[in-house]
Image (spheres, rainbow, N blue to C red):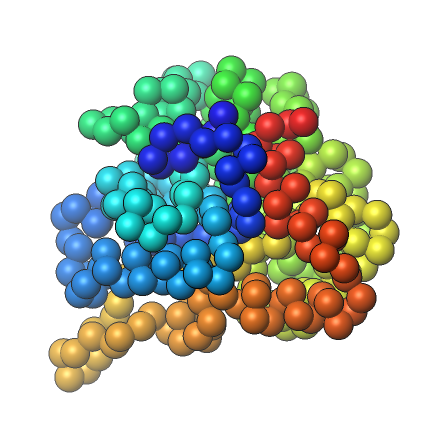
Length: 315
Ligand SMILES: [Zn+2]
């Protein structure tokens, strides 16, 4: 069973799954304290976007918003119930680490993450279904290493899989994977995300050969063109790695909206303007591109249905 925000679901209920998306990205506690920064009709906008996703055939998405990215479990629960899209939410930590963390031990932090998985986020009975840790262009800083080790230990205790925000340009996953190896993590339950921000297939094959899944989860993205992302995916499929690739968008419904000089708020964040297809970009752009390259329906099912199932169950 997998913890969705509306209770446990079977792996067979996942269906067509996007493995890295967001209902909202802001900052810890912001949705409760300063919600107007996210614009008006917040919940309605998120529900509308997910209803469109459901109508296009998207059954489930993994919401990668940690505490420091502003997770609001009750919001996720309502958006999931109203749209019909299963949402599996993460615990763990992204890059915004508060100063106190340098004095907290991995063991202490792991205990908190295990509680999010087994008992639910505090004040709710919404349980986390995935663990997440992160490092970016600065590499694995001492604070982020505490979080990575805490996530590894929470995984070892609960069996819940790990998604990893990484920075392929700096080959940061080499260090992240080394930490997981030291902690005794089963690398077949780890997904290294944002991996399609590079076209360096040698580096990507090295990650895959460690046993990890690859999150090809930036579409349309900006460091690499969308088509080159798909060409890279096709090269990895042809090299025999289809069973460990997870395409997604890293798309966000609700952002902080910056007021214009005249005091009005834009309807959409600049990032949303770059991708008017939103969560449907995969169906409208990427899957047709894969088909034109000769990728068949079986492989499409492997990418979006079978791989998520195996990531969650380890089977
Ligand atoms: Zn993300």
